Length: 173
Ligand code: CU
Image 1 (cartoon, rainbow, N blue to C red):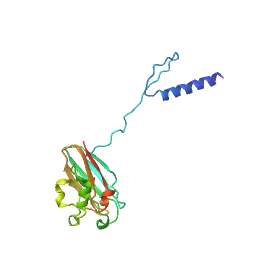
Image 2 (cartoon, rainbow, N blue to C red):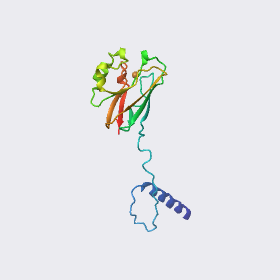
Image 3 (cartoon, rainbow, N blue to C red):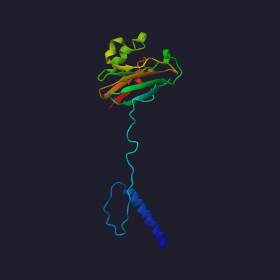
Image 4 (tube, rainbow, N blue to C red):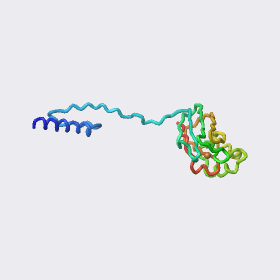
């Protein structure tokens, strides 16, 4: 009987420890339960910011991420890897980073007419921060560039039809 009560008190204390985690209440407790709060919060909260960026494109017309992050004012190395098998004539990918404020849809529309320059429209060069070359399955391309101005820059693949699926943002902090 006595043992049973003890167990339920222990269970209750355990419950109190769990429920009161975070907000320490001034308990009107005579049998005063010492609650040691050793909570370790703030773990893995921040997304990694690195100026060495790797992104993949596949045969399903997808980038491996739609968000990249980098630091302003320092050289950024970006590698685009085509992890598929289809040649670039049918499933080519590139990664084009646009200046802030660029009309992405209008840019993409111009780009698909620029087949002879791998879908990089010469007339729109001023809207481009940086771009990889067009690659097919198994290929990769690495580019280096620096962005001085913090901001959010759209990127896309300009191969015809791909922008619907293959786009994202590069956040420069
Ligand atoms: Cu593509």
